[in-house]
Image 1: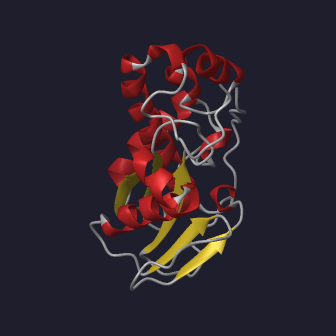
Image 2: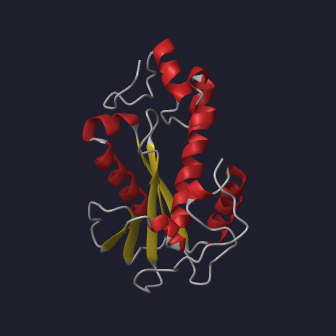
Amino acid sequence: MPPDSTKTPSLLATHTGQPHEAGLDEAGRGCLAGPVFAAAVILPPDFNPRFLNDSKQLTARRREALRTLICAEAVAWAVGEASTAEIAAINIAQASYLAMHRAVAALAVPATHLLLDGNRFQPFPGAPHTCAVRGDGRYRHIAAASILAKTFRDEHMLVLAQEYPQYGWAQNAGYPTAAHQAALRAHGPSPHHRPSFRLAY
């Protein structure tokens, strides 16, 4: 279980100081099954709720509470995804960029600058960007994007788990846990598994 500290970390509001800078993050890049999701979030400058942090540092209950708050109070937010078929066709890195581009394009308020978690990105037309390694633990809007990407993807995997309960996606969300890999060996891959990944079965 991730830590669930009672102390709110000190995160920065933006990198450039621009009011419509969007934070970007993805979820599901390292999974064996399911799409990759990404979120883009523009926050008000004074948005700094208790517990806001990288989604991996929060419990599921805390993530859901923050998701509700982010969706209600963000200047703009959007979620994009790239399918298993797209991951197979263009590789997971390009699919992650595609999901991020779809999220940015769906923002109700255009982003003036993009700040994303990681060290590489494919430029989005009309919006300069900056990469921030471990940015989800440094910037509020990237932390918010990590929470939305994670919670929306987990929700999607719960739906897929109803059709394919044998893989335990309700618990592992498609990540390569020992139980997931054992299920792959027992049942073989589903249509939602990523054929370009090394599947242990």
